[in-house]
Image 1 (tube, rainbow, N blue to C red):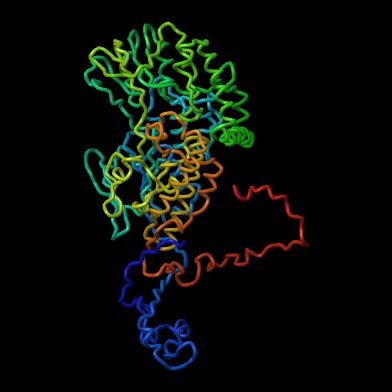
Image 2 (cartoon, rainbow, N blue to C red):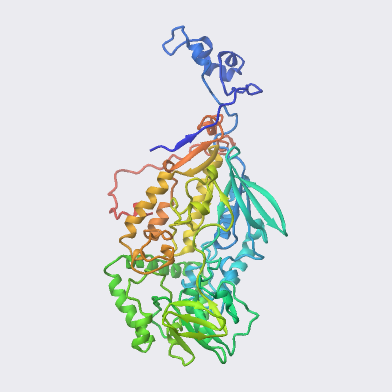
Amino acid sequence: MAPSIVTPDLPTSPVADGKVPATFTTKDAKDLPETLRSHFADQINGKTTDGAKSTTSDRLKEHTVPFNDQYALNPRKLRIITIGAGFSGLVLAHKFQHAYPELQDFVDHTIFEGRSDIGGTWLVNTYPGVQCDVPSHLYAFPFDPNPDWPRFYSSGPAIQEYIKRTVKKWNLDRDIQLETQVVGAYWQEDSGKWKITVRHDGVERDEFCDILISGQGNLVSPAWPKITGLSDFKGHVTHSARWDHDFDYSNKRIAVIGNGSSGIQIVPQMTKLPGTTVRNFIRGPAWHLGRETDDPNPEFLEEEKESFRDRADHREYRKGIIHRTNKAFRLFMKGEPNETTVALASAQMAEKLNHDPVLCEQLIPKWEIGCRRVTPGPGYLESFSKPNCSLTSSPIVKVTEKGIVTADGQEFECDVLVCATGFDVSKCPQYPLVGQNGVNLAQKWKDEPTSYLSVGTDDFPNYFTMAGPNCLCGHGSLVEALNWTGDYFVKMIKKIATEDIKYMVPKASSVHAFGKYQDEIHKTLVWSGSCRSWYKRGTVDGRVTHLFAGSAILFRRLLGEIRSEHYDIAYNSGNPFRFLGNGFTEWEMKPDADLGWYVQVAKAGPEAPPANDMSWVAK
């Protein structure tokens, strides 16, 4: 199916300086330069294609030739705005400044960051024990991998320091405007631009752009628990994503709500403080699958770091990790070998719990491994063997002035409530984002977010999303996925700029069809299993809307090309081939251009074809 084409009305006024007018007539042809008169000789003489004098001149009154007297594929200037200066925004900054330097000639890029510094997730998540649950050497910018990671899993401060060092090295903050909060984004159909309202120093202003990119991550905005009486508590309340570093947590009774990635990192740290007692309140168990080593998060030796500083050696090390990670995707399939992994993980967790039957019952899941995000959680399970750490799995009914009341009727008094209850992962922006026909994205996605390949959605032209719905964030390397997504956006940007396109927007049918087939694949994967997870918007049996249903290899391949048939395309002129210009590309007119570069050295004869290993499909 071809892409839909939307064209405005053709201009009717003639073009000055001898150029062909938009509405072309016989009279206009007689006024053309000789080089073009010959091209339209038959039309000037009023002949039909068979040479007969007839009514051709009447037909020519309607003949349109929107001649564009400039080189073919000449890119138009584009203003691009990216929202957010975390990993997504910084990957794009590198694309525009370094990976694709040709963009400098026609792209004006601005990144709006509402906070006072760069870093995104790693700027706002500063709770004790915060670390990445992805191996350090996978969680790095592909253009500047870090040979000096201190440990196998890196702490939040180490990652933030690496981000800032990399930004300084590559000058990636050149286009960033800090403390500039986006408060609204509105599509302008007539001009084909986005109007972005931003606030800086309390003053609002409007900015306009041709393309709007969301680089806002999932793990930034805190999701406070919806518990009756939370505001009545007289003690200290904090959230893992808004940690209060001025408060002294020593010698306190601390209640930690939640056992997701942040909760399992906070609990061990709180137990280490002098005079604390810690109680972890959980709704259900979660898988914790660590490395089978004496130290689950070992330091890298200096000789290892020295080896990593050799870029070829470092590539081989990183390649080995990503190979094993990509190969492990098959573990997310239901049945074998997931069931084998469940047995191994259960034994590993039971060992760390000293085979305590009560703790094992409360903390070891019965559902598929991977149904919720699997986190290493070094020290979490072992914390419950300490005298100052305990667990409650009875649901929380309410919070009182003194503490927490659970469904079994018990009240637990405490001095501190730590809400390790995750983030707003609705994918909806915290401001009005209004697309075509007044459609508000928050309203459109209030029940469940939808996307086309995770990169955009219908009703929102020239709006690109990094890590959008159905993105590759459940396995593999998220940073690599952002890198591939950025490359896809560059292809889109070049297409829009060089083909005189006003906008591109995924068809509603494309979004629907993509989501439907994702559902079919998800039926075979553990993410649709019997657990409650944010992958399914906090439900047990809902649709998996956050994760791409497929391997990292497939995701990369999928973003390797633009499938124009899946988009509605509107052009700036009345003819979608206006980008052909005067029939020449600018490059071929250069005196030193090699215009025969495509001539190849011929082979002496037929060669035996290599075995078809089907790599051509994936690569």
